[in-house]
Each structure stands twice: as structure tokens, then as C-alpha cells.
Length: 120
Image 1 (cartoon, one colour):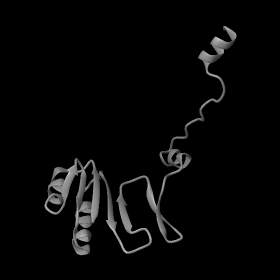
Image 2 (cartoon, rainbow, N blue to C red; image 1 turned 90 degrees about the vertical axis):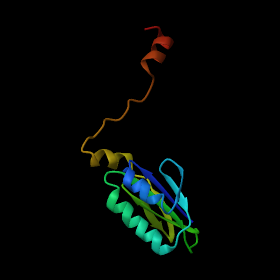
Image 3 (cartoon, one colour; image 1 turned 180 degrees about the horizontal axis):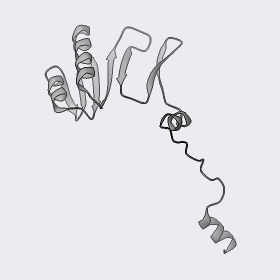
């Protein structure tokens, strides 16, 4: 079984995927294809997705029973002692990556709570 989720994809790619898979929701494709067809579909996705994002999850013969691939995602797959997990980016790394360092939020009482508490 295979599940593909596309975000910001061109209509050409969506039409191509509907030849092989069922579109159960906008941008979500499900079906059962051979490994060869799965690889060819992934190559088509990489060639045509442009600035969009793609995630493909498929059944596999491993401990988890599945495997996945991503393209254009901030969350990336990471191998952890034989298990494939998703690594979420650290927010401080994301801020550095964009070239903008945001200041930390102020902690403590809000202005409204101070006004109610102290009447100022």
C-alpha cells in the first residue's frame, strides 16, 4: 500500500497520480502499486513538484512495517537505532536559518493582569 500527500502541487502532477492512485481527499493519494511503479511515481513527483511539498508512505518489510520519503519538508526523516523517525527542526535553528534572530518573549505578568492586581 502507498499513501502520497502533496501540498502546492501543479495540476499536471495531480492528474498523473490519479492514473495510478485514488485521490481520497485533495492532495492525498492512496493505492497499491509495485515497487517499480512506486519509484517511478516518486521520480515524477520530484521532477514536477516545483516549490511544493511531498510525503510518500509505503509498506515495507522492516520492524515498523512502513517506510517514507519526504521532499520540501522542514521535518526530516532520521534513522534512530534502526527506526525511522521524523526530526522536527529546532525553533532556534529555524530562526538562524532564516537569518533573523527573534527576541525571546517577555516572561512574567501581562499588563492587563498587573492593572487588575495593582490598579495601575
